[in-house]
Image (tube, rainbow, N blue to C red; front, side, top):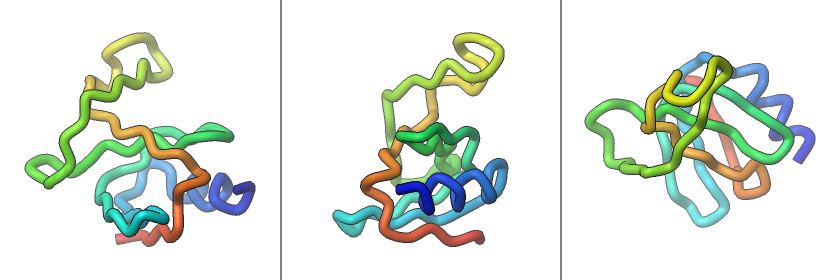
Amino acid sequence: MEEAYYNCMRLKNRKVRIMTRDMKHYTGTIVDVDYNNVYLRPERGGPVQTSAFYPGPYGPGWYGNDILTLSLFTLLAIALI
């Protein structure tokens, strides 16, 4: 999981495609990473819909409510696009 953390940190604020262990694909921009999760802003108009909330570094609502939270444990692959 440490490798997933450092890969996500390296790609922070970049557009990526993530594949999870259950073979789901997500495309968007990594807005934050912690030791358990990666926070992804999905592409507008994409197939991902979420009600997850991430408060952001400057208080609630900084990123809006369109942040998808993915566990680093579930990541299978991540690619810069």
